[in-house]
Amino acid sequence: MTIHITTNEDIRKAIRRKLRLPVRFVRDNVLEGPCASDPEDHCERRCDYWNLRGRERAQLRSSFDDLISAVKSRQRIVVWTSGLWRDRLMLWALCAWRLRNRPEHPDIDIVVLGDAPEDGFGRGFVHVKPADARRGLDEARAQSLTRVRHMARSWRKLCGRSPVLATEGGRADRVRKDLVELGTHQAAFFPRLDGSALTLSWVDELLFACLDKDWMTPVDVFVHNSSAGEELRNGWGTRIGDIFLAMRLRQWAEHRGAEAALESVPYRTDRAPMLEARYRLTAVGDEIKRHGLAEIAQGPPLPVWGVTAYDPGAPWVVVDDGAGQKRLQRLGEPAAQDAG
Image (tube, rainbow, N blue to C red; front, side, top):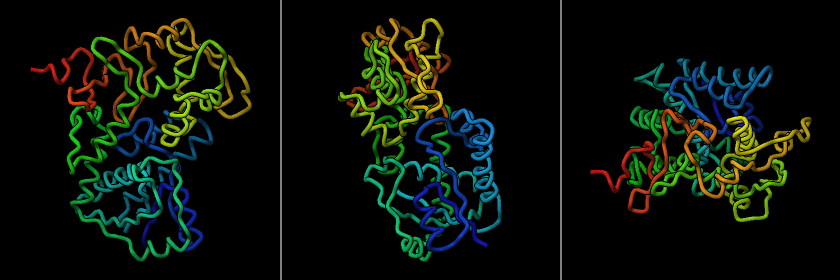
């Protein structure tokens, strides 16, 4: 018996329509939020990150249970994936979890379908015809133990206790080019250090650039008529979606109580998160927008793979390494160009 797995909705539909095969499926974009080397821990972290309760938590838990039981089985696995990073990361995870149970004979085949953008960061949709599923099944590629181990190591790297660019730096060599690309993506969620000035992360700076002292819903922020609004829509919106923006605004409003950078009021609580509240800058938020952070604890913590941005206990910040490349270091450590 062969077990079929995918994390892409378009591919799942093509398999079911053309091949009439059962396929195990998880819908979860790991380009944002936490991840873990252990599959059970990973599932719990994802449920907590999305604040899932009741039926929604049970549904995601059930989907992950199906994947976990597959990687623990002794059956051949066919993973249907795409060139999108969100799918490739879950492929890495499946390889890592499979090796925990079958370290010498992982028995994984891979089928790559769809027309992902060149950089791999897209909205999660790929164009797949049902006929592609038949051709894909015929062309499934068995993965060598060396290849599976390579992808498993990459997953463990993302789950590590240090940001990717803390060790990779800007070295875009052929072997680690994929991790440099992902590390650059991860770095955009961490606060930045320019000389002695501590500033917002790139993603948070875009949010704050769209905010002022007028009330705005997450939708208003997302469609803001500015270069920041355009970047949120066409840059980060295609990678992580708009729900992240609503969640992040809520985190800023709930962080530090009376000293919060944003204040909020309920708006249409019967609607989706993008309309559940309205936000505006407080005096603290306006000061942060204009002059940067007084301390790293002003920002609400945000899990990003194995580490947490804005964590006073592990204050990682983005710095320039002196050669035009970005890296992450602990706040208070000498920058790369100053290190002796």
